[in-house]
Each structure stands twice: as C-alpha cells, then as structure tokens.
Image (cartoon, rainbow, N blue to C red; front, side):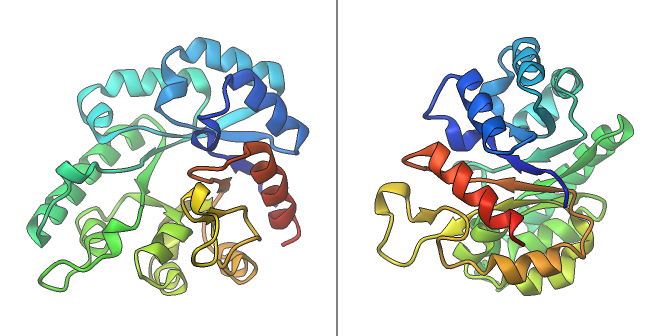
Length: 248
C-alpha cells in the first residue's frame, strides 16, 4: 500500500517539530503533509525531515498565498520536495453566499491550477463541511467548484463530507477520478470526545473506513493522510490510526 502520511496540523499543539517527526517515524510513518506554520523556515524544516527520514510530498497553502505570492509557494514546495499542492480552506468571511460566487471561486482555483501544474505540481482543493451544504437555490458549492474548475484534483476529506451532511460513497463514485489524496479521520459517536471536538482516532469512531478504503483504492489517490483536528494526545492518535489503516 502507498506510504501512509500524517497532516502535521494534527500535532500543532505538541511542539517542537523535531519531536513530532521522531514520534511519527517511530510509529511507522514515512510521510507528512505540511501546513503554514512549518513553512516559516523551509530550509530548517527540510533539514528536520531529512534527519528523521521523513518526506513531505504534499502541502497546504492558503488561497491568498497561492494567488498573491506564487513564487514563494513554488520556493517552499521546491525546498520541501513536494509533489502536490492543495488549497485547504476558505475563511467564513470569504465564503460566497450564492451559486455565482462559488462558481467564481472555482474559476480562481482553475487559474491557480494553470500556474502550479505548469510548474510540475499536482494542484487541487481540500474540502471541509461547508461546501456540501445547499445554498438557498439548492445548489451545492462543491459541485459548483468542480464544474468551474474542470482540471483541479481533489484531496477528499471524508469525515468533513459526512459532517456536511453528504454521502461520501456517492461523492467518490461521482468524482473519484479527481481524487489524488485522502484525509483519513474519524468521527466520535454523538456526545463523545467533546474535548477533542467530536473527532476520534481512525477506527475508533463511526466512519466505515474499511468499506471506504475498498473504493478509494480504485481512485488515483496516492496519499492517505491521517488527520485529527484536536487530539488530546497526538501520539495515541498517530499510533492507533496507522494500525487501523494498515489492517485494510
């Protein structure tokens, strides 16, 4: 199976980075995914990665950075050895409120794709839950994004699809050809893990990862990235989750 990865955002509350990388390597990870905080000194980050025998093939970059500081993004991605760049989020105050707005946002992602694909990178969008919540006219933002950005790939965050009220199996069936990476996270049973924002270690929640992995292996997904948005113990999450996924 493809090497399993880990979104470093999951360990943002457990510094320093060297300690996190040592922990991940000890628990069987060979890859990580980057996000903004680890880009402040990309050369130092690269040295830490190399020292622990870990690579960073994928990374998250804000839409602001992607559009306004393209060379900076390319420099960071180059130093860290990335192969894929994903736009991960859109702040609440920047989210469109109608179909035309979401289509326009999709066009912006398509324009970013032109820039980063030309430089040799996979480029795509990473979803949360808000893209699956119907607009007043009944349209779905994620569909509008895809329709307006036919070239972009998709880093599918399955648990956020579920939290958005959508069916991940249906979305994988309809758009699986776009999936180049998957965020692997789990949702605690209702009322549990409130101190962890209702998330769970992979295999310890309600998401049917065994069935999902069967169909995801039929997509182009090359990266399966563990993520927990607020673990109380990042090593527990990392250890238990990789054991679960390796069993599939």
